[in-house]
Image (cartoon, rainbow over all chains, first blue to last red; front, side):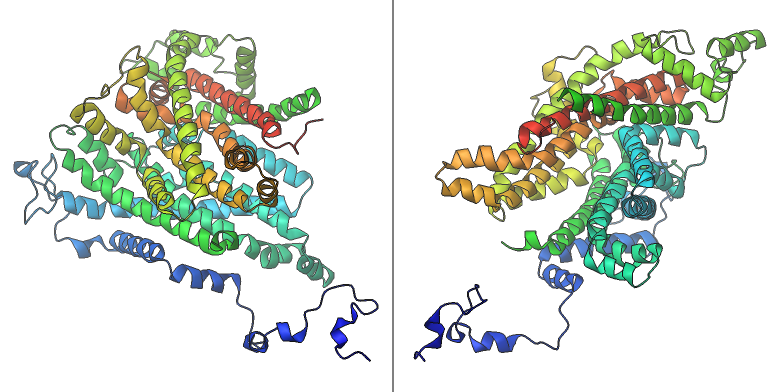
Length: 319
Length: 308
């Protein structure tokens, strides 16, 4: 019997290197709490996000925008239509913080009241897109075969039509346009990307062992899709949806600016920008405030999407 | 290779038919009579209205109308619009300017997007990277029309470097600012795509191998990092050309350019269905052609992809 039995080389049947006990610190082994559940992807992501200032900034912007959209009355004592032509184009003052526009309306009040349609359109359009694109993508990815072929071709067709063209054509048909209508139109041609994302991640999850196990245990196909495949596709969908919300807000403002989105009877940032455009040379500041409000809101959502993506992607986390 | 192109062309057919049918349906099935609208307040005499309906096959069932439209597309005879002006003439007037604008925007977004994206990706987490990222966020968050106004005020009015509006028959210089504005959002997306892709590829095995075998820094970057990172970027650019041409509606309006965007917008508002459908078809074709090109480019970028 040699003195050091680890020097004997590999034992029969063992060809892997096993670290001698001296090299493994006992502390490292003891530090692993074996009875504790492993932290989930979402817990990891939350821990990661909490540390980043960008997350808190984005959260603050989104919270403020949403609160203003729900109760604009809290932030101003004026009404958005309390205008007097005698006070047209006043410079900023104690009474009118951002000055007044051409019709003598208080710009600050209009900026505050303009938040609601933008946020509403963004939230509604994103919800529709996630529901529509998510279910089409999930069905195509999970029930492959002819159903997948047909749904994927339909997605291709909708993708091939330029988004703005479709939105303009449909919106020009609608006589009474409100936030819901604009959101529906935006969603009816904006769902393709999310369908492709969902299809891809459902496809990649489908052949995992836990799905096979669920199948073997007699779970229905729909049950597997809802309980196992979709939660695994949730991360990329959430990331995309957060950014999409921001871009829908921009799309709504652009369409309203063109005069084919929300009607002038609804106070909105896009509408005010389109009005301010006519006096851009005399009073550029009338244009600046709604633009900054719009940009900041969208920035909040896009930053949030960025932070969530970084937090959910373990590859991006390692520096 | 030829086989591959043939197969791809076959795949294009359902997309083309589906997309044109969808647009055609949306435009021609909308409520309201486009012919009645032509007469304005006094209305057209019934005989004239009837004749116009005959001429445009408006009395036929929807699918027959669509087939007539397809025949027009394939025989390159688009016919006149409701006012009698040939659609081909409208298109010939509108497309060259917009095409030039879109190509300029495409070049700008590609060069700057990939260039800055590459540098940012190589220095992920450094100052340059963070600065560029903030700028891309701003570009995405600010609508194109606001960007256009800001550019007009700063570069056009205050600094006087570039013409404020383009007007009729614009030259390269007066299209430069509209092209930059049009490219803005897409450039931000391309930059971010390149950055993420490059940062990921930097740690890939093949890049480590390339470094280990002693290739110079620029060789590693150009041949192994950038080339592999470009696949998602090229996909995006391919889909973007059609969007640039349709999305020029806003830019053309701000800079007073008579192009596709403006023509399309006016045709939609005025109910010139024939023109709308014709422009939409061309945009769909542009999209399909660009995507085909992109598919072939994949083989150039990734040696593993071969179209045998």
